[in-house]
Image (tube, rainbow, N blue to C red; front, side):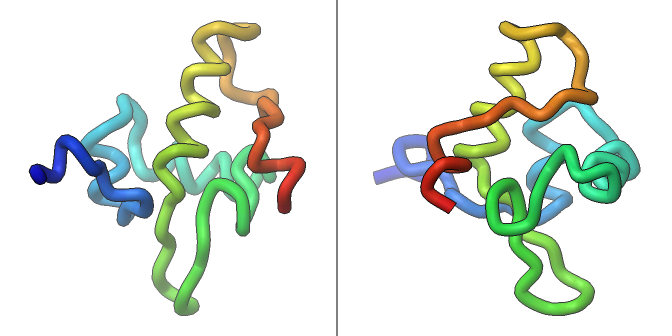
Length: 83
């Protein structure tokens, strides 16, 4: 099976910015502002490494386009209720 049939669940920052139309600084800003939360949208396995949960990020992005149209409000997902 190809990688397209089973996309990676966790992405590095470089891999994430290849998939979404935002710059790394924008992502860091969302993390700092609490828009994206550790344990939900991303993990920090080492002090200098961030990995992003692609299914959650994808749902968040879809909610931004379907919802209010801006990225400052955080959309709740099914995963939020589990964590």
